[in-house]
Amino acid sequence: MSLIRIEDYRLAFDGFEGRVHVLDGIDLAIEAGESVGIVGETGCGKSVLARSLLRLNPSPPARVVSGAIRYEGEDILAMGGGALRRLRGGIIGMVFQDPVTYLNPVFTIGQQMQEVLRAHEPGLSRAQRRARCIELLEAVRLPEAAALLDRYPHELSGGMRQRVLIAEALAGNPRVLVADEPTTALDVTIQRQILALIADLVARLGLTLMLISHDLGVIGAACRRIVVMYAGTIVEDAPAELLFGSPLHPYTRGLLAAMPDLRQPGHMPSGIPGSIPNLRDPPQGCRYHPRCPLAMPICCTTKPVLRGAPHAVACHAVAP
Image (tube, rainbow, N blue to C red; front, side, top):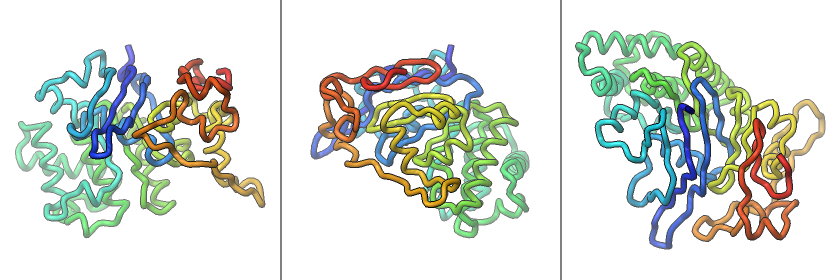
């Protein structure tokens, strides 16, 4: 049994201008101890999928159309309040994209971390909670951890704030860590440090990792398996070495062609023509066919099935 299994998951958002079909038939299995990267253009549904694991998409407007999300066989979408509270943080920890948004500016770091511990370890005394906070900050390699507890978020650099979010995500001793764009808005040096920290924590604590990014370089540095999403669908799923060495889907090839290659002087990245579709009225069949150089008549009418192992692809024109 897979640790996490997503089955034919479809999610839509209802708005004033109609229903937006954000996720369309997601099928994904994640085994215990795996490091899985989810990559794709902005707006492809990566973050919505990640939040679905914790049922954090606001309802309304979010509406589950069909499918199931299972943790060790139990459907997360059917969980009651108590089980859901244990899941959030206690089983699946989440590192959000923007620490400025998710850290409250009027409370100290210590106050915010202790609030998390009160929810997941209510039996700890105040002194024990403070000691645990120091331990967590030291685990994410923040210097002078005790002093940091009395500081406010605005007094910390972007990289330090991101480490605090990681520490908070680990406070409930989760089995799964979901990191949603954890290196966004950080400079390259700090990005590398954060990725190295996440990789070290995953290995040392035996965590299962889902890393969300639009940057293939970031995903490739931290994950052994890569899932490529386009317009709410999974188009390719493969071990990292296979995906980088022999990409199958035209969209994946386009993403790789758009990356600069420093090993080739004079190399010019090429963009993908067209733009992502309007998901209020998505294309029939394969959602990528309006931009695809290999599109055939069947692509315009029939949605391709994700097939093949260990290198799976959803494309009528390419055999797995």
